[in-house]
Length: 281
Image (cartoon, rainbow, N blue to C red; front, side, top):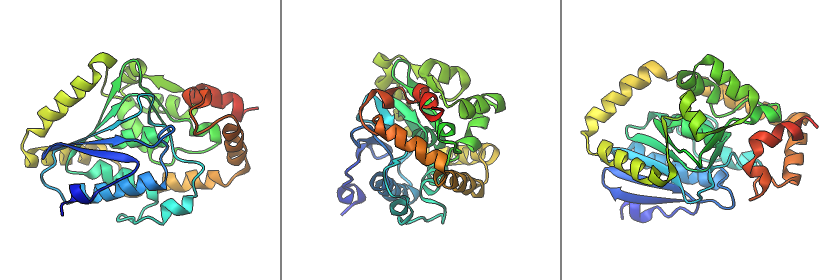
């Protein structure tokens, strides 16, 4: 039985558009948080892709038009995620983002909806980010928890947006819509939502048609000159989980859960704006 036949995930859907073009659709209601089960399914998928010399392009999108990946699941036990296999030996989320960044296949985040915190970090770990002009929202709100972004945003953002804007994003904790994200270089480009699916699919099909070895070699050179050493990223995770044990983090998280964190509430739609008021209360 092939991997396609055996792989039956619950929180994402794999669609084989062609042997060279795969689509991975996140579907973890109510708001697509990143929890241990989704992480387990991603790790299984990554293992296949690391050993696959046919897939040229993987597009990651969402079944929910309002949420690409909301953020890390703060209600889940960290131990459950850390118990998952880690071929790199790194913490669970770092293992995923580092492995995504090193795949031979070209990876594209098709961001329609909200991608905050670890959701933003997932997108940053992929090779390209295309955003819906009207629907995309990106941000790193960890400073509102008195914490560092744990999945490597501080290491990946500067190469994309520059040092000053990386500080602006990480220290402000604000949301960035599609237009501003494009202007800053947070995403490759923002496409009007009515044209978004057609654009991403057309680009993915075009790139998937090129020679696999050529794509792999192009990626290896770009990565060589733009990617931090893998060993840098566990430092971010260690800092985040150290912060998570502090009173400030736990107090802020409790206030946010009281107001509807990880549910389909106004808070999740406006977290980048609201977190400052709640955290500083």
